[in-house]
Length: 285
Image 1 (spheres, one colour):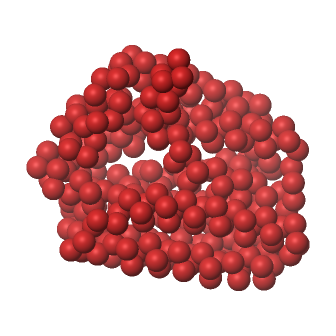
Image 2 (cartoon, helix red, strand yellow):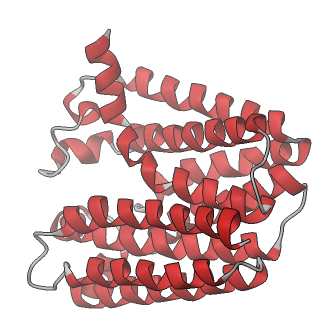
Image 3 (cartoon, helix red, strand yellow):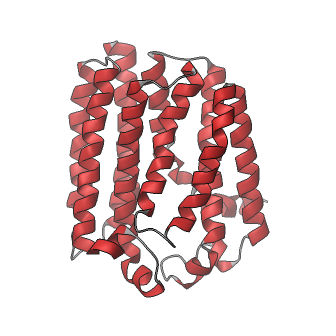
């Protein structure tokens, strides 16, 4: 049983949930201007984890034939057959039901909008088969996180949530482009779509840098419209250093440090941002 659980956690890369949760909780504190009820936090966390799990399960299910042929992914549990296709789909469906129920527990508007998120999670893994801009579909999913948090807490969409959502969208789309560089040759040979395939490695890196610059601008605007203090804005310049460092690791003729840029640096960015927000709300505010 323990080994089976470990396989499922590896299947959906559960450890990568660190990218979504800190930003999602940051949206909670920015919008609430303090600490909401534990019940709200609980159901928001359930929604974040279940939505991401559903998305990863759908991704693994749809991409099984591709992943089995890709040297980078051929040893994943889904590609090796360690988890059966019906089990993967069941995990996606159960996670989707949990997500919709968590939205219901937050408020009715969140409940009625929750199927839109599920549709996007289904669309993303199919996107590489029909659009070069598949990364923006993933970005749109993350754009909806602060929007959903705002709806859950306020029953409406605040301006600060919109800018935070745009910032998250371009952050995720930017590092998804860098991640796709690993499969540049494979994707080209199999007729799959991505920004690196469309524009080449050099231009894809430039696009990713542009996306992350937009992220930084949107985070500044988030602080402005949320009336955050100097602690937040000072912290953003620390955060910008990590964004710059991430791109210094990636070079057109040397992609060996992509995993470090993707997993380590982006994990730090997400956590540092949440710490900055907490310090601002509970000290600066």
